[in-house]
Length: 481
Image (spheres, rainbow, N blue to C red):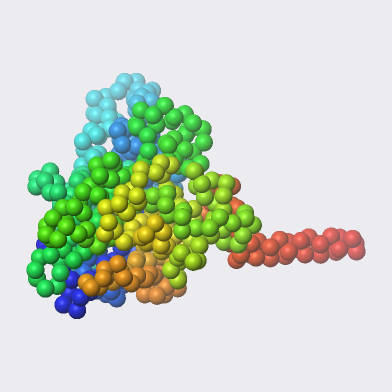
């Protein structure tokens, strides 16, 4: 399938970030995707990672905390809690749980009949993985249906939660290619210099004149998942078990980064495109990935801790508070949480600047952020979550990001958010859940960030005043007696 600028010289892209859903995809998410496609009539949809809620109880039997582990061996605390709430049980019990079951049967019957033994034995890991694969395919079919029905091509990269269901991203890549319109290349079948690995590939956008010249390129980049090797993370597991505050990172060295091959490819692919065009010039290009690099912090300004709406930085930027640098950011930008970038800077932005042609890098990952800033000679920006099954901002701020590129100068693109509030209405079907997801805190940093939100502080102050007034009135009535 060839992507080409329209006759009017435009090309429209929708970025969908962090759908992050279970097999029964939330209907509000589907409604948002359908409405955004009707409104924008895109030429391409890009999915920028964490499409799969890999830690969902649906995958409790095959959950992978990190790549290289035994499926289902170390389930997150939050998944265990959710599984109990929803009545989901492990299908692949631990060895001690299996022994307990057999002991109960032995005590009850005086022996363990072969039929009961067979009944107690867990299903094979292959059977469980097949079941999980079916659930993943069910998820994909649900959120891709509006895109496929509209006949819009789509491209996919991956985040830090996709693989955690137990199905690794190379297998997920094969699943996506089962759907009409998928642009992800199969590098194992047909090696291509425009692709290096699942989730890292280039999509040339040809000129409208039919010459075949690439007038622009969309780069999809697999930004990795978690830092550290499985062996290192295993050694740190006791600390994770003792303090699972982060539920993702307490047993790791932070988030991952694009592979060395992907970083090298970002430079080399521009040379390949220039050679194909025959003019030796880099092609104007925008890159999409999941996890933002450290340079995203350069779009912010450090401020005192008591500044309204400031957020505290994460990990390498912990202990400092930030707001958007309005002189660098486009109108309509907002910062709702810390930038959760890797601890290491692998030189991705520098590589892109040196290669030439790149004018923007957009990410997801941080569900409450939707800013676009200009630093290091390019735009760095976000799309917030478009899903309704994970944490995020208020319903009206969840949405997808629309880009309109012009063939004469792709770098002079226009972008805006298509939000639930704009397309559908102020409230979702489950505002109680969304309210909790917007205000959920897991640590002292989260509490401090909440207290910097003027509406939250005003509400708490009002409640405190009412409580004090009530207690005072009660004391006065008791005193009169």
